[in-house]
Image 1 (cartoon, rainbow over the protein chains, first blue to last red):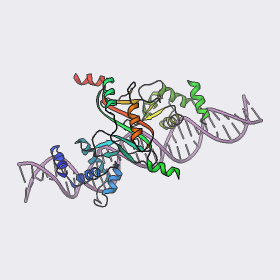
Image 2: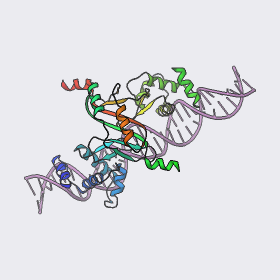
Image 3: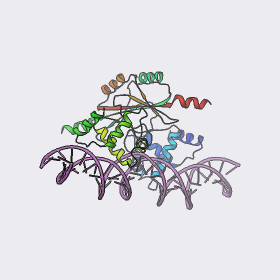
Image 4: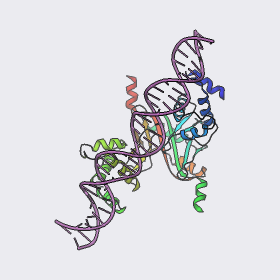
Length: 141
Length: 141
DNA sequence: ATATACTTAGATAACGATTTTCCATTACTA
DNA sequence: TAGTAATGGAAAATCGTTATCTAAGTATAT
């Protein structure tokens, strides 16, 4: 996996640096869809000199080479996802956590849109909103 | 129509002002999903003293009383839509215009998600991205 | 109509996420 | 290994949005 990102960066003319590898590792090992701030905090112990600007510059590069996707769930900040496969997301309006939605059937919906819109379709994002199980329990108590 | 918003504002304890009516009229008479800046510019001639702050305060009130919905298509700014019925949106990655997608079948998709997620669903937003017909033509030339 | 009480509009400053700038440092190439 | 172009980090800038403050407006009771 490490070799893949190394090769990808080099092929696209980007230099391979420890910071870039570290930021990608954080995303690749997380299901929490971290924001820039979260990535920054998580790397703080191991990379105390790294700045937020580096995080932002790096995620933009990672997106450009197709290793991650950028989510905009309507919060004040973006979130980053190393899983670039087509899948939907759901955000808890109570605690803000963002989860993946796998195994839901959207292909028919997308196909219908592609057929009916005069646009040339290049992508889509589906965001759901609700209350997560943990927050539902909290409310009862 | 004017009476409806007047009554709605008053019922909810908001005062009825010319600015609020004007901002709602702009949204009700547009299919372009204007941003705050666009609303502001459009009203500039008729309301030269109105400030952007008033636009933001007003759209928040309009959303609160259910007259408009707020869209986050992934641009740098929000867009506002006086059509609060459930429908998807598509944005041109070239020129930035945002169009409605009516008559597409999403009910099955939503139902499938509701069944499979442990969240209690409260809403969803579907955004499509692509190249609009006008920009497709531009590219050929 | 007029006074009163309360809300609002507008100007301005504040805010916070993101982006840019600049330069010392680093990664790659010959 | 030296040279060169790209990068990381610190700080400042940017920009959409929000909060603050006060004069002016709206609604209600006279």
